[in-house]
Image (cartoon, rainbow, N blue to C red; front, side, top):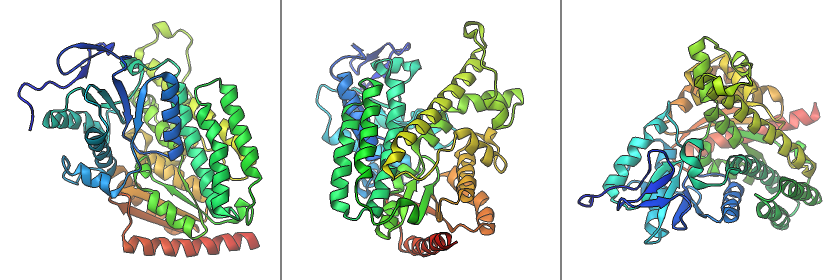
Length: 450
């Protein structure tokens, strides 16, 4: 029940400080402030987040892996008809409020802050309603550190290091999946892998050369781990379908690993790049610049002081997406000597252009990215099976399945689309995955013989 006269904590109008539930001013850097990441992600990304915050001197917590318990907890506030990421984030937020918050704590719950177009566009209203219903003092939900909110008091290099978390965390998880399948002795191999990865996590937010030296050392150490065969000889599956993947992919990834098939969950940076591209797409549409190639070719003027704000935001979006692509390419190259990486980098522009032929990027929906990723993966010859993993009640995911199905029917790569309601799969979905596993192994054998 809501407290009488309850007032939620909030940022000031200029985002320069916090106004707590008693109306008092609190600085963003106050030691009582804690940042809590309630969005699921790769385990290595979470470790990188925690160590970066430790270096900041700012308190931080990260959510556990999305589970059935997470989804159940969310039902305190949810109907169950919401999209899976929404339910997971609400569940993680409620669990943290119940078990982790200190009495005098001022908590920023960090999650996606975007205007739309999918259900996340309504999240600010949802958080406002839930905050009032819960009557929780000094908790601000649905924030993301960014320029417009003064980075929530974090250092200026936060944007750079947060980009690195997501790129390097994804790549380490890709390499780990390869090793879990290919290692001669999985247990000892994983011990070496994790010990080699520890300096990467520990040197985050030091000098970049130290961080990158740790990555190179990791690649050298894991390259010495005995494998039953080179990674390129194993069948491989791409699990794709947008940012929803990070809440639901676990049982699908584990299913294929148990059958000697290497799964790759599509890079987190791909979804992040889609979000960052929004100002560019919006500006391009207004100006009649319709294709991704034309939009990414916008002239980058030097006189930004007198530049139209919309153009400035569009150009900044190009730079942000390009920066993510450069990071991914750079770190993938550094990690390649490990022998565990197998998927060449695709730029976000390439993915967008491939998808734009079937679904306009100007609709600004993940459907375009999902379709583009399918097309390029099917052409690459790297993968022996493709799993389009969508979460229940995600319209962009359902639209992508509709567009891809006729393309997949004409293709040679085994394909399946799954619509899941959380981090679990049904018996029928498992049977479908078993069929894909058999087909993928057969296709890889044909390729090796051909």
